[in-house]
Length: 419
Image (tube, rainbow, N blue to C red; front, side, top):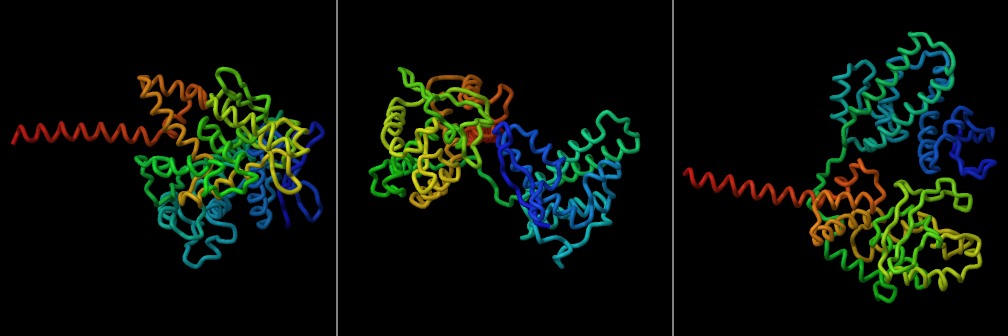
């Protein structure tokens, strides 16, 4: 059993992926092939493909044929489900059977199982709770796909339907009971990037700064990428798929953030994706000028750059002149982190942008509701999105702190009057 996830392009040049059985060099399961083709975003399909690899490897070792179980409507016994769910809690190769310090839970009831989850949550062999939940979510998703398609147009017995619903409910219930295993307390009062570190970052990314961590050939490009993420708060995927045609260089400089999940011009093995809806982000005139200068100077040095419209290009090796990969952007942030002695990464710039956006809105005299409405527009979020609270935890914490202090002063003042 030797499985691997393999990207490929279909006859319509759409980038897809599949789980391959390397022994025969064929797809592991044609139902899975069809399932993965249903995803609009390649990176999402890729994530589910890796979870399918995990699930197929687990069930194949135990002689459980997922397709046949759904076709026959037998699904899983309670013991089989409990064994699988326990396995999802641990890293590959580390299960209760392989660890003498972990008790078998095959015959435990739901309450005992919940207690056991709590008791072992800090085990060194445990994976993050988010990983466990995603493994289960991926299995539920694939089982639902199989059930709906295998039994489509057929009259399903009440017994089979009941087993199907019971299987999904047991999986979902377990996932809900998996508690957050993060033992560190997150202090929302802390800024995404401390002020002194942030100003140090702004200085060190300048191409001629003596402590700039990047090679001379890459400094101008990397400076623009970091500055772009700082000024707009866009995702790293949106920055990597930004095209020259997305620039609007008039009196109000701006960029168009577009959604093109199956861009035929993107030749990258793993094309970046834009998750939020299409929108427009404002740019400072200075950054727009540097972008245009980069396009006609550094970018133009590479003959391969004439074959596509993407702004940022790779500058080394065989991929020189081709669209830059997300991994390359992540690496430039790794280098930057070492120089400022503080871990920064692309998505942290998005959090910092939200803090600065809040300050700017308050300085303009806007209401909290008005700021949040503009924030949703600037970030490409839907109107009912709850991302406002997630990305603005620092400002919310500061406001809550001030209200709490005022309440304490009020309470203490009344206590003094009564004494």
